[in-house]
Image (cartoon, rainbow, N blue to C red):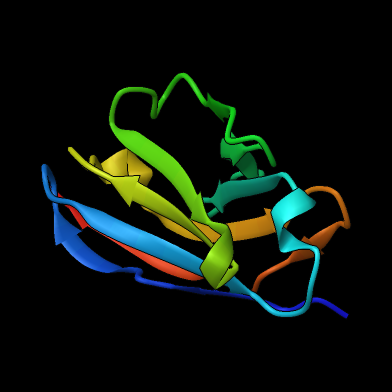
Amino acid sequence: QVQLVESGGGVVQAGGSLRLSCVASGSMFSISAMGWYRQAPGKERELVAIISSVYDTTYADSVRGRFTVSRDNSKNTVYLQMNSLKPEDTAVYYCSDRRRGYWGQGTQVTVSS
């Protein structure tokens, strides 16, 4: 059983930055594509960014150029650096092991205007 634990959420003013972290337990992290998703109140969960096992990255149009996904396999950790935050980025952010289908519990990000 793999556990994913997100951290780094909080309240920030528009234009600010946050860095989310997601630590995975267990082995084989390095061969998993990892994804960041978010879900705002009353909306469906949406993909934010993906980083593959070979460090290829994909971003949603709404965050491209503002968010950066990265990973450190030595620490079993994937990061989401979020800059130039907007109120519409407010959501619960989740990380996921896309290969094995595991999800974290989520971390709240609130951007005030």
